[in-house]
Picture 1 (tube, rainbow, N blue to C red):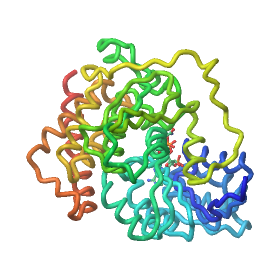
Picture 2 (cartoon, rainbow, N blue to C red; picture 1 turned 180 degrees about the vertical axis):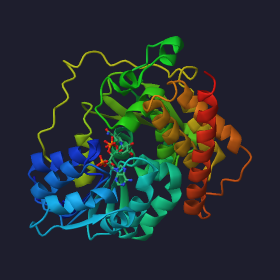
Picture 3 (cartoon, helix red, strand yellow; picture 1 turned 180 degrees about the horizontal axis):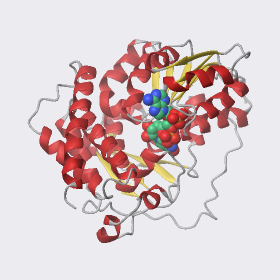
Picture 4 (spheres, rainbow, N blue to C red; picture 1 turned 135 degrees about the vertical axis):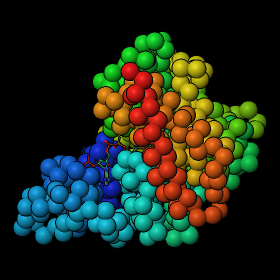
Length: 398
Ligand SMILES: NC(=O)c1ccc[n+]([C@@H]2O[C@H](COP(=O)([O-])OP(=O)(O)OC[C@H]3O[C@@H](n4cnc5c(N)ncnc54)[C@H](OP(=O)(O)O)[C@@H]3O)[C@@H](O)[C@H]2O)c1
């Protein structure tokens, strides 16, 4: 094997989260030599400081400014520059890096991801909300700056690996696989009583809280349909969802001649992260290997749109276009937070999203070519306000 052409200077936005920690773990296990321009965390100053001691970034940033004095104290004498607050997060995103892992969770990841894209760095995109809220703008920005966006979501990484842009017109379907989440076999009545702990217990993947709840409602798959439509410029009617409880086939691309290509692997985010890091090369690291003889049967089934209405709501927002997906995302973020804090039930998450989309129906969401960022910010703020009203009304029921 010849020498690999790997990025030397990198940043990790959201380094203390599930994807951020996995990113540093892959680099560690692969033994690659990288210079870290910036590490960014939200509130977890302890883990950020530990990472900074080990990885020696030029800059370490904590978004929660109240934690800045503690970060400064923990990194005193190291020579590592520290920063706090949203403007410092943007400064870190703009730091001189060839490769940036975008792994902040939620709408909060959009501005830093765009800032990083403007530098022309390769963006390894885990923060799916950036694409949901401003997909066309983000992809255009990266392209104009001479960079690229490489998906990290395992399904999109799978498609990316078997999708040939030169043959995009000959693709007949993208098929996104979904584990079905912890409630795949639960009845509607059981789901109505589901607790946050039960919803957080994903059968195959260990992930942050927001995406775990989104997997339980299948809103995550809905968001991924939107993500795929933007990333691969595919009309929504050619994107399908297939439930595959073992999470081994990560997604499939069907071509016009009836040939279907898939990417397989054990459910471990470190593989798509390694792929995004080395692409188009392949990073040798001690990944668990797929052993199909021992993995047991692989099964597939149609998603149940009655019990998982989030899938339909996401497609509805995608069809509305412009900033409608940003409104969907904001309503979902607010609803997930309300469920996790015990303010409402599990099935209320989709009710809140549906209520917000209904309240916003008929509004103009702008177009994909207009000022999508301003439209996304406005749709986000309006949807959060409306979500608070719907959550309040749901809570007043009892
Ligand atoms: N986990 C997965 O397997 C997976 C798979 C596919 C896609 N994704 C996507 O990847 C993203 C990250 O997911 P995750 O599961 O890693 O989430 P997570 O474990 O909750 O981590 C989120 C990260 O973002 C940081 N953060 C939160 N708010 C922030 C803010 N306002 N400014 C700066 N940093 C902030 C957190 O910092 P603190 O912890 O320090 O507060 C943490 O480092 C999400 O968009 C998710 O949909 C995740």
